[in-house]
Length: 108
Length: 119
Image (tube, rainbow over all chains, first blue to last red; front, side):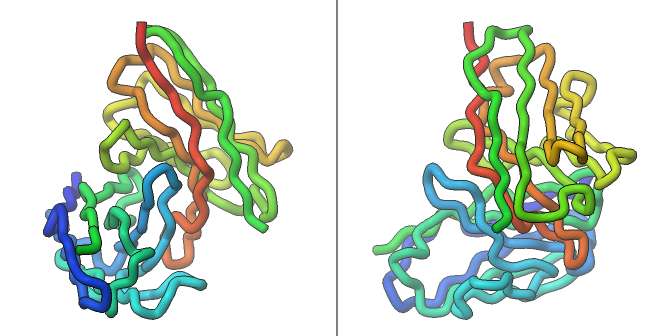
């Protein structure tokens, strides 16, 4: 089974900061990686798919990169509404769509 | 507008059964693969099950295989999850989610339905 790890598990940053979250896969998953944002009490929202493609309607301050086993989600100029938990997900294997453990982003 | 609306959650005793439904609208349901994803209170997301657009291919997470059964009725634009032999650790919010196969992503999610397994 493919395992995903995320780092850090929690981060606190100031409005306007650039924030980077890393997701690592236990084996290569090509570019079949998605990123989701989840706010308390709400369903997850798709931000990035195919590792680097921005979902329609998502602000351009969000970007993704990587392939194989290492991926990053970057938020340029963090905004107050970006307070949320962010999850990566591998979609390389249709038999098991693993999620990462999540990264909670807070505003200082 | 794409909408996914889950229903059927509630309180059930350990060992009991429950059937969740997900009503889809705003898109051609029979063209899309679907999933169930759950989230235990205060925990992360856990993929539960996948079903192909025709219903011919199905996958389950190890944690639910043999106890849960996913199905769909394309004539009714509905997705189902039959949950048997429920355990306390199945307590979670259950989401249905659509897969967009081009680019592979879960592009739309329902609002979730809470299942609580407790005596």
